[in-house]
Length: 217
Image 1 (cartoon, rainbow, N blue to C red):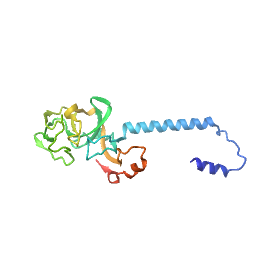
Image 2: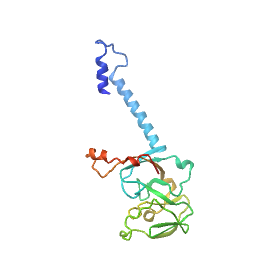
Image 3: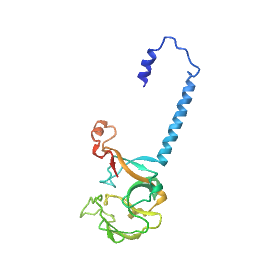
Image 4: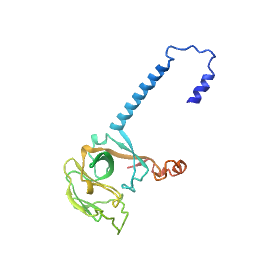
C-alpha cells in the first residue's frame, strides 16, 4: 500500500491544491474511528457468534492435535441442547479464566461409569471410535481408568478427553455447568506442528497439516 501510494503521488500534477479535509488530524480521527468500529465488531463476533481457539495439548488426540486451530460456534446452543459426542469449549471449573475443550459423554439424567477407561452410559457400553489409549497395559500413575458410577444432574454435563490416559476431565474436576459452556467446536480451519519453535518459520511452514484443514468436528 505504501509503495502504491508513492507511485500514485509521483504521477500527480506538480501543484496539488490542498482540500479542506487534507489535514493530518482529520486522517487521524478517521483512523481512530475506523479502528474503534473494527474492534467493536471483532469483539461482538468473538463473544456472540464464532471464535477461534488454538489447541495447546494432546488431551483430545487424535480428534484434535497440538497446533490445530478450531472455530467455536457460540450461538449453536441457543437453539440446540448439548448432545453426547459434541466437542465443547467451556470455562475450566477450577479456574474460569482458562478455556478447556472436551467431549460430552453424559447429559442430564445419565448415569456414567468408567471401567478400564471404557465409558458406560446408563449401564450400556458406548462405542468410542475417537478414544485413544496411549498406555495400553501400562496405566499412568493417578490415572482414573475406573470411575463412578455418578449421575449427571440437571443443567450439567460429564465430559472426557479423547486421549484417555493423558487428560484431565470430569473424572477429576467434576461436571460442567451449561452456563459455563462457550459453544460447540465445529471445524479445524488450520493446523501445523506447534512444537517447532516460532522463530523457525521455514520448518513451521513445511509442517502445515493440509489434510486437517477444513475437518469437521
